[in-house]
Length: 153
Image (cartoon, rainbow, N blue to C red; front, side, top):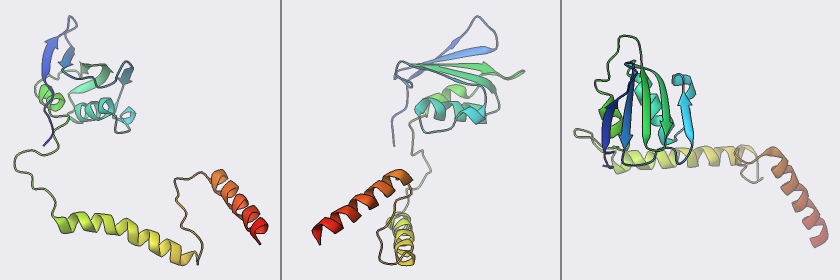
């Protein structure tokens, strides 16, 4: 499932550099440089492809600009197998993989719901607080509710 990315491998003038030109943009109009696997945090396509390239151990640096992925090869490494990594960037299901069953998917959905219910029962009758909401907004909301309750009574 997913679409393979059309990739054309091109050698550079510099022997330890290889360039991959794809049929789709990975960064928009921005440059992204990755000096190591530590820099590849996140789910952006450029970070994902860089992470996968670093995991091979064949790459010491990655630069992504638009639809071009430039790799600096590690000493003694070759570009063998790197084209497939870029090509399979958007391949989520490969031959031999089995999709999760309905029960497995429902277990993933029910686990966060059970955690939210237990958190709300521990807090008493108060509202469920989403940890993604900044604390200053929660305080401002609580103050507004208190003012509204005073005016309503």
